[in-house]
Image (cartoon, rainbow over all chains, first blue to last red):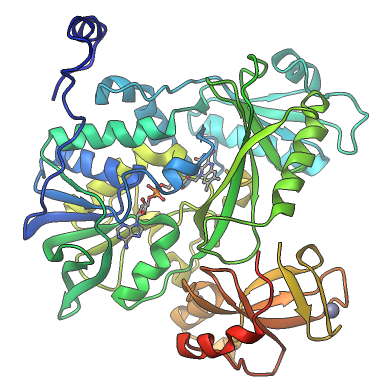
Length: 417
Length: 108
Ligand SMILES: Cc1cc2nc3c(=O)[nH]c(=O)nc-3n(C[C@H](O)[C@H](O)[C@H](O)COP(=O)(O)OP(=O)(O)OC[C@H]3O[C@@H](n4cnc5c(N)ncnc54)[C@H](O)[C@@H]3O)c2cc1C
Ligand SMILES: [Zn+2]
């Protein structure tokens, strides 16, 4: 792998940037792999990378039906934070946060991770009680967090309406300074490049249409374009399409797939240097390095696989943003899109063995899995390497929906992002 | 934006008057106390979540406030039919779907 550096940039300038190496190979799939990862989003690519790097398993294929990172990874609003309520999930998201903090160096790829802080606003007494409880829990978990009053919020975001004039005045907020945003595409590309360099085969335009099973164990996959490809172990990381994949394998998941929309404004001069989220008026906004306001809110209520939703959902989102930031009322919106998120009843992911031996699923991240990409990949790789749940992934078994050990993160998951 | 026919009000209304309530035709176990954890968990949480024809429950939340069922394609978002609780869907397979194209309602 060609190492990226400032010196390299100058060097390549001398040859008019014509000698850059391809970022990854485009190999023909082999007949058999040690591990097949289905789904080349951020989570699948990170899983392959850590399998190769941490566990020395390099005979891996990532099978992606479209192009790498073209699913929710390409469509999310890139908010990263780790201030979840319960120990199990906070530990997982904080594990991701620690990996984020060294990720650009580790991958030799600038993922533009920017720890500009995340504010979660409270507008009611109950909001504030929840926020205090969560921040206190976070502190016990060793995760940074503070409870701010409107005066302190005003210092961080001067043009937000912190007066008592709005219908739901801001009463306070939780503040995680280590939270922020990252460049979504760069995360997928960085993991893909680094995994490829370790020998992982990235196969694009290769849709998995069935799982091959013998005596209740998965032995490979049937693909649309390359026939049967065998593997000792299979990890399925297909986000919104996971229920469809499970149906192929012959079982059900506790998931529903919903459209989740987001939109960006035209680029404007720097105006917002942090991330502002509100569960109650229901919306969130940050500003990208390009200058556009990145805005999102809730899912469309119906099940859908169409990567689009209804307009009134966006309308409500924008209403919430204008309530918080009257100054944005005349900013023009540029683009709007949707992804398909796999929502789980307790707003926590599933990283789990399944009723089919050698077939593992990593899904259910719903509206908020981008922030977990490194931790999810790292933890799922350990699970796949061991062939069973690890300390970290054990609580996220799909069978928690049988025994009732749910991890309710609806409060901390809050506004869908 | 869906334009939905409420079988109770017997008229088309805009989506914002309605609320989607998930998969339809999931019978509550007759004797919950005798269910195994697995049976109860399946009933509570596990869903078919298909890509394609889906029978689902909707409520006319700011209209008549009654629940009804809908058959809808989750890929194309086409609403194929709506029918009252207790009735059976008339469209259940892809083949039937084609025949029914003529009485299709407006999608997004
Ligand atoms: C609008 C929006 C905003 C969001 N905002 C945030 C946010 O601010 N912060 C945050 O943390 N999270 C956010 N999320 C959630 C986040 O995007 C996802 O949880 C995360 O990206 C999931 O990553 P993934 O790699 O599992 O999924 P994906 O990137 O969707 O990857 C799954 C891949 O599997 C492939 N696939 C599916 N079926 C098959 C098959 N049969 N064969 C081969 N390949 C297949 C797909 O093509 C896809 O590329 C948002 C999501 C959306 C839609
Ligand atoms: Zn009605």
